[in-house]
Image (cartoon, rainbow, N blue to C red):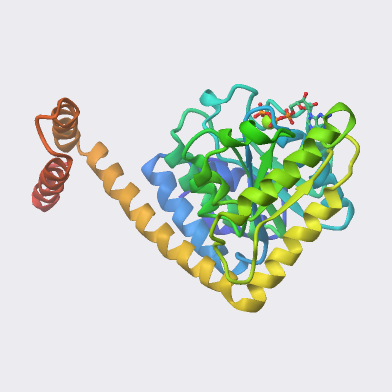
Length: 337
Ligand SMILES: Nc1nc2c(ncn2[C@@H]2O[C@H](COP(=O)(O)OP(=O)(O)OP(=O)(O)O)[C@@H](O)[C@H]2O)c(=O)[nH]1
Ligand SMILES: [Mg+2]
């Protein structure tokens, strides 16, 4: 049995655990593969790595296009690796929907970080929808942790459901916001604000410094109206200039305080357990969906039912129940192949 790199899963697991970059890259390619035989290998790999996962701090980084995510990750990331951390940067966006380009397209903005031996940067796999990319990102996090990374960034563009998907797989969700307040603040969806454990106002330098200071005050005020997600942590707002390097250490200090507070209260443990259970169910959901698509007869029925649901001729729950029945029928028929 061989994986995309021509290595069997247990050898690949050894390579990952030893921190070998090529092994890590190949392991992530394996978990991202949609081929059923690769999937079997990926499950063996993940099982072999399980005992070595969970020890990193997982940080989600989100924000609207152009807010300064890539620049922040470069400067924050360099700060961390210079302080001895082993960093991984993963992205959750379907590259096709990105205006500014994927993490890979950002190599110029993350030039120094991407060359640093203590940083591992992995672009988002292209072509897939958010759900599919998020599904594999959890597994990529596990691979990175097993390879000895103690800080994992998961970057997502702040435009859709991807924030929720990312917030569901990280410990700390950092939302980057532009140096603008007042009415413009309304532009940030309340639902996204509610996910944030830390708000970072970017570009707190030069001409935009005064606006950044006002934005900090406005966001602090706005956050008071939001019910905190944890009893041990109230979301904080800081200002930061990736260009001047100011606020970068504040960001790390806030994240470590967050992690310590949640750890002490036991909420971090609860969060991760709940995330694992949610992962189980979302994976099962995907597996059933995969199965529907792979059984030609059922897939055909699925597109017909989908059309009826779309036109309003059939209710979605009825269509779903009919598909599950069709799947059962196919699966209980002895295969001719
Ligand atoms: N003055 C100033 N400009 C910044 C700062 N951070 C980013 N910028 C500028 O803002 C622009 C967008 O920065 P990016 O880091 O590419 O933003 P992004 O959020 O990654 O953008 P997308 O990948 O397109 O979503 C660039 O022109 C940066 O040079 C900062 O701290 N200060
Ligand atoms: Mg970017």
